[in-house]
Structures are given as C-alpha cells and as structure tokens.
Image 1 (cartoon, rainbow, N blue to C red):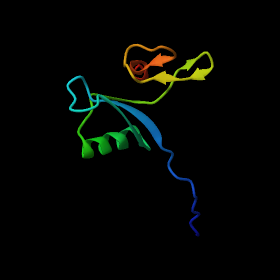
Image 2 (cartoon, rainbow, N blue to C red):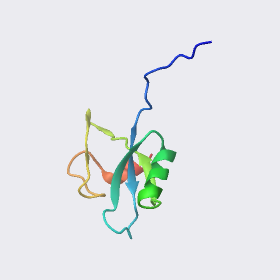
Image 3 (tube, rainbow, N blue to C red):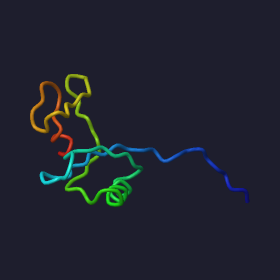
Image 4 (cartoon, one colour):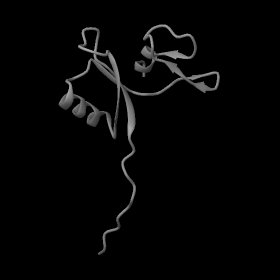
Length: 87
C-alpha cells in the first residue's frame, strides 16, 4: 500500500511569556511554537522556565483586536497586557 504524503505543516501559535517580577531582562516575551509544550521546552532550553505562559488571544474591543504592551496594567485603548494571561 502506498503512503500518501501531505504538504500540511504544523501551524505555529503565538504565546505570551511572563518571566515574573524578578526577571533578568525583559519581563514579557513572545514565542511561536506548534504547542504550549513545545514552547515550554524551547524556552527552557534557551532561557529557563517562565512564571507563566498563555496563548496570545487579543480581546475584541469594539470590533478591533488591539492590545497595548507598553504597560502591563494600564491601557489607553483596547486591552492591557495582563488580560492576555486571563485565559
């Protein structure tokens, strides 16, 4: 029996990483991987284990998907960064 090959590649998802308040460098980051487990393995291999990781899901605000990332708790418009971890 002949094996059928497909050209379908695993879809990358984007995850938000929180390194915690005592991080050495930036507190938040983004990583792309095919699964949350792959993202955690990749992060652990290059930096270490994060405090928190969540899929990047930008909330809808009046029909626009926008999130400010300058400040984790205050947003001029749209959602704020900490809302991305409330999934």
